[in-house]
Length: 156
Image 1: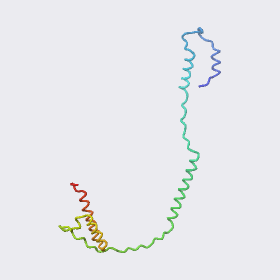
Image 2 (image 1 turned 60 degrees about the vertical axis):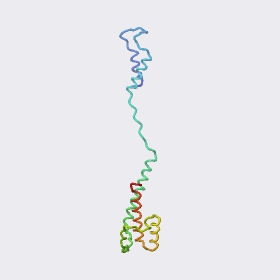
Image 3 (image 1 turned 135 degrees about the vertical axis):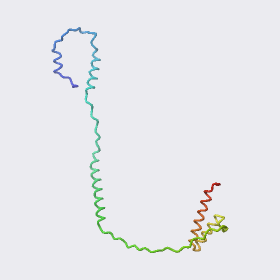
């Protein structure tokens, strides 16, 4: 529709007008306005251009196929590996627990080394060196409990 039809143009030249008008008729729009209206009419009836489709890279399909093959082979090898019998080493369980006496309850009057944190830590190290690890661990737990209580006290 946007192209000129030569047959139609020829028909328009041959027809006989019904009314004669003067060449310089003031009621006729200027030719530039005709061209503008015709151009806008052509644009209005023009079919919409389809949106360009996204086309992936040329290497995307071969890469996807290769990745699928690698993944498939990995799955096959994983299942083939699971089908082979595994040698499970023999495990034995032995009881290595010792009887530990609970630490003595804290007395109302503390020893002098519990009043100073450095002396308390030195006493814990002395107990460990003497082989009294259970008592040293109990003293360390009491030391940590006291230090947490001291750090969380409201007057600090």
